Length: 592
Image 1 (cartoon, one colour):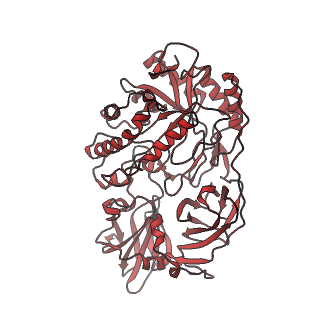
Image 2 (cartoon, rainbow, N blue to C red):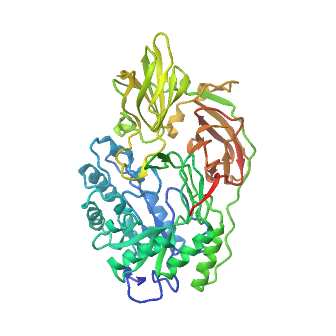
Image 3 (cartoon, rainbow, N blue to C red):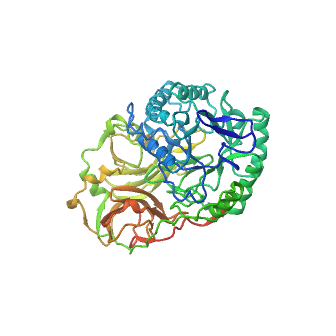
């Protein structure tokens, strides 16, 4: 049974055959764009009539007890409407999306008893505040009020988590109490569908293969009868993790599965239609057997690339949907131009140790403090970036502790190794007199999917031990690397690049552009691991273990004239920064 879109009624569970979403012959094809990652580009040549939008709690509630500007989701929804798209709103509060903590704000973890995605009071109070502000902006945009929102999803894949049977009814009621009147949906994969059903809410499914399609549609028929079927997330590709391959799903396989979904009488949402980017530190992670953080690129091997370029999938799906719609499609729009700018070389340099001198007094504490509980940002803690711990030691021995996620250990300014999930002990060499022990800890991204989402505090967790004795009297520096972080380093702080730099360090370059800026891809050949900042904005992480070898740099990030480029490098600097017109996302591995 298809969905029907009736004037004044919105999306409903109709009985007439022949059209999904009631938008004419064929099948409804929403296409998911995460509003924080990408802007819709050439959709008109293969027109999906819907856009699935996933705002997240961490954006408006970056500060405890205060909802900042939540107009970006509203602006995104209005933009979708202006270009002729309906919208499925997926407001969470948890959205997964391979972003840090599934879109939840890190300050929630200041509470040692926090139970995310449950009816725990500390969590529901934050959700209520988030919904109060978000819903006041999006409720007027519902279809029944003349807007583009035709359906709203209740949370995301909760059946796979399922820690609290009262939680999903709470989220459903919270949405309805604030004025949501459109069709409510849930969304679950094969591992959670049986536990994700909510009374009065239409269940939808997430999958990638025809085998999963057969299993899940059979289950839906058994529990929902002839109610409409929808694949809320058909995964057109997959995300990548540092140290792994670049995942690819063959375009022929995509066409086969999409065709099977249509033949099954189901509506379908392409996740992702447009690839995106985990700009800054927003990437998430997975932790089942091992901790694996996601790369900066969220290209996803999607229908359109991270930069909005066409793929073989796009062309095949365009032809497929065009053939079943019976509506002639216009020629594909011109693509966004790309530019291979001339390489640039760093000219100025600032070691981390010199940078500390301009940061004021550190936080002083008898014991280590994790990132989220640092007394910074008006009591909201530190969400992202790095954190530096210092203490004095008078002996050598075995250093041990729990570091989340990666800690580079220094004796004075000399690196002696790393502590992480797998390496929890390191030998501190023989020293004389008092020596400064330093640990630079990187938050590589909080887990966004899995049962251990509550255990995502970053930095040093608990005591740090030398020869089994807890170390005391720490000096702690918050290195969040927000735009304001760099404003304290005036021209007098930087020096000429030495022949043998001390690491970690900041490297300053400039990119001169004489014409209208274009998209480009930044290549850091010879550099090892760090972060790039363009005109003060955090472009994202790079790491030579791959798979990703280039960083997507959108033209709007650049300006005509001089552009400031700062690289924070942990270990080893390359000779130059290069720019290319094409991405290099690493060694391909085909998904089977």
